[in-house]
Length: 161
Image (cartoon, rainbow, N blue to C red; front, side):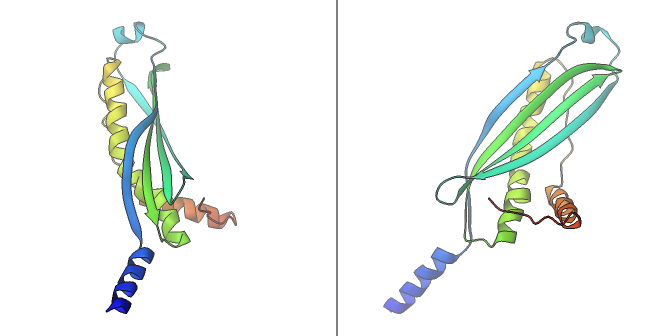
């Protein structure tokens, strides 16, 4: 009986674990350099979106993942506004092999953070008195696969911090 309990406890210790601990805004910025004049012009926006992720290990199998969304909206040739949000999360991730850990940090965690970042960015833009952005969903699994292909073509190896 004790051997069965020890085996079960040992399996629990080595089983993969994933737990979201906290989601928070790490940084938020908004700039409307041409206001108030921009509000008096015909609105024909062009939207430029940059996104980036980064992660760093914390203590005891905790990891911080930061998703950065940067938007530059131009009306004609003039910048109407620039908005950026760094949406972060703390995740407990244990007992994953390197490939699974890399995928979890590079795609799975950003997928969790994106709806929060999108909402924060949309709220920021509307508070600046501009129309809502309504960013389309992002396929982080596809972006992660593209980055792996790029790294393999360049002879680089993915690393897990």
